[in-house]
Image 1 (cartoon, rainbow, N blue to C red):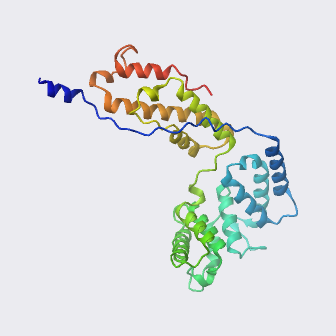
Image 2: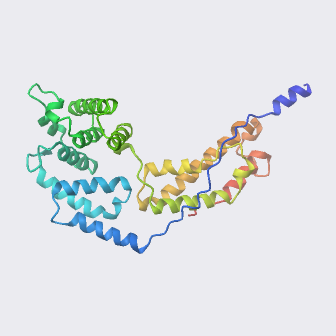
Image 3: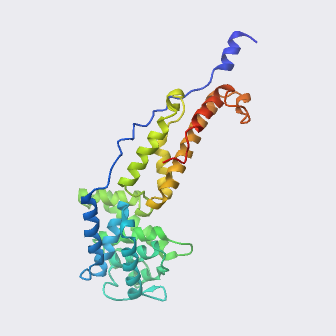
Length: 309
């Protein structure tokens, strides 16, 4: 074999992946003010002076923030009471606010999100005499109601034709308002964001617990110094954490998130090592740690326990 051929055989493709920024900065501790605010919010949702519509708005406001678990029991109690008052045989009954699109759509979505069986037949009441949803029956200027209905359609189950129709109708109407510049700049941005990323498909906001987890995982990741030894491999620690966060954000699942994030990060790193660097003889996992470049990296990596927090 010629020298040139030998050189080509030993050359491996490498990619210059940009490493994540240091994430240890996410060390946030709970404090007295945080606890005070939690108690105030608990009083808000428990207040008998607030009407059902206001309580639903509060629940809908607090859920995307990723802090609803602080009020989990209060929220469940509130929704249970509202469910018993506003539904009968899984159908939403006509009571105060029963013909308000925003209230009905929000009620439907929150109840279904929390496991209550609710029929989508309730939206039939918003059709016109021809049995169709249209701007007149829903009032085109009712942006909040249209947005609420659009969000409700995201919880559609098979064979719910009314929600299929409502999804197409609300998206078309709201997109038309954006394209024709009929909304204020602030509302335009809000509606456009909701159309592109509905609440049901979003990640919850990072809370102090999640930030601490990122900081701890980053410290664990840096100890074996593998990212420095294999700079051509994918260092995707933040992305690994967000994948696990998308599956479970609740505080009681912290260990699950941490282990899942570490495993995904290890898999990405090993893939980055094996793909450009490994010869066929190096791919045998039965080799001892002292044998070959690949197994040396692997031994170094797994001496740092995954399950440590």
